[in-house]
Length: 507
Ligand code: GLU
Image (tube, rainbow, N blue to C red; front, side, top):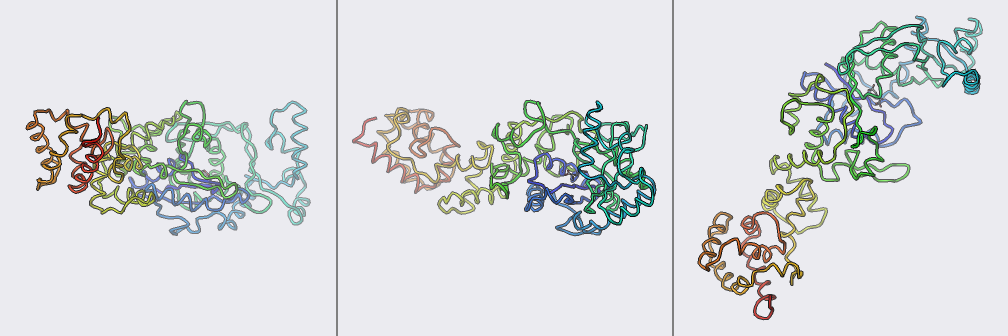
């Protein structure tokens, strides 16, 4: 199996493109095949600087790596179509020789005139096709001598000669048999007047030369496939298998998911931050939002693929083992941001702390929080991850660690303090000073004992002790918080509290 991802570098990679790359990658890994990156940059007018690097970086962040491509090389290099441009013209001329294509000399103005003429005659959206071509200036209508001299002196294009009255049928691995009638298709340009190929020619020639066995791409290319099938036929090449992936729809199912929908509904549609080189506009991606790549690819895998069974949380290895095209649906897949968050949360809970450590450390440093050892930070991550969906929420959940309670507490929190315990805090602190073991289970045992000795239930104490220790009403287990804060810091916070709420201040 040899599959490819063939983006045009016309802007940032949309999350739908990441899904297309992912499905190709999963199959290649599962079958021990190769996954190829081919940059389809023949339309120089739409070229956006930085887009190719962005595509590679985004996929690499997701854990999607290529076996061949412009950045890694390979036996079919070059992998950028702009660097292969010389080879396409020969294939276009070959088709003309075989009678499957022809030269056309019409100017923009003549094309325009043709359209208005046929529109006036009642034709809807006239195209260059079996009906209109005979009225135009091309190698089918002009005498051979004139064709030869025009070819030497004038710009020309090569157009595909769409056969008349044919049903083009092909098998799609997701949709089953698909058929188009050639009357719905026009004589597409294959080679432009500047000698550059169009998408159709370059795509088919390269898929053939690169030995691609499966073309797996978005549904928007389905209508181009009959032309591709006819091109394979005309060249006499073996056809790859085709699979067209369902569209990604807006959360309300109303249409294709666009960047505008993401902006409007508050979720990213790009994997990484992107700055538009022309307008300077910055869009944040899933990474900046605090998603894990593990979460993003798991969520994207489920957008259109149904694993069957209950399991929804998958590692990349599990996806490689389980993925199959026959469980990809034809129907468009609705985007569901809440589901994406949920899946991310599951990975946040399950991944080894060592995996999260560098990511959280980076956020920690970006916010210039006080320096912290790996060991302490790992403990904090462990404490907080149950309560977090996205990475930055880990920092929120451990605020108590880097921010001492600000005293006095706001009135609403003061009202929750237990006055009996406040009176006893100096004794409580004295006992704490005596403790020699400082670890979560031992602290829990000790606190329960102490509560009993004071004739109080521990449940009556905890909210106050939490406020004293963290300044917050809720959070991870208090004993774990104490353990990670350390004895000295807890003593310090108790002292500070007593000095504000001790003798002088009434609660
Ligand atoms: N260059 C096309 C794109 O931008 C490739 C479509 C295909 O995979 O054939 O998506």
